[in-house]
Image 1 (cartoon, rainbow, N blue to C red):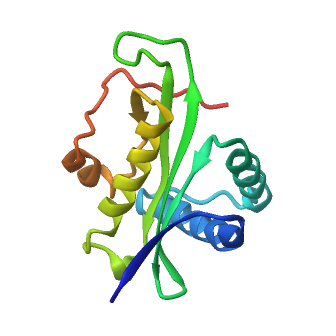
Image 2 (tube, rainbow, N blue to C red):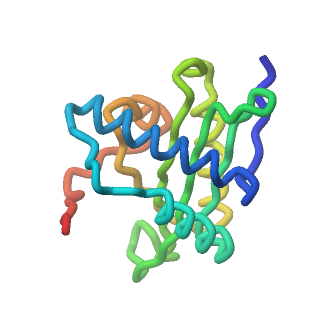
Amino acid sequence: MDIVYKKLTENELDQIIEMRINQLTEEYTSEGKTVPENVDLKKSLMDFYTKNMAAGTYVSWLAFDGDKIVGTSGMSFAEKPPYFTCPTGRLGILSSMYTDPDYRRMGIATQLLDRVVKEARDYGCGTIYITASNMGVKLYEAYGFKHNGNFLQYYF
């Protein structure tokens, strides 16, 4: 098996959207949650990817086995007022890390993570944030991500 890594282009958006929805469904159900029936993410995801890829505020790397996408990663870029541990104020927000179940435990996720972390460094980010699924925590901890006990979320 020869895995090839490439940056996401508009050519793969339909496939990536389908994979993202499958990923979210897998995460929800593995945590005992029910996927909402009245939420259709296809249009929202297409709008997000198209707008943010064009603006340079989103980058994704993909892992291919032949023509099949077997792994995904994503990094969004945002800015906030600079602070001591992030003097640029530029933040990376890691998302969409997913590996096809048949390709897990082969180092693909680490290779994808290396690529998007480099993208964040090149963008000038001083910090990367992630809200990890239960499945992903070990990967991120092994890579060097640290827990932030003060992280809170507000839902609308």
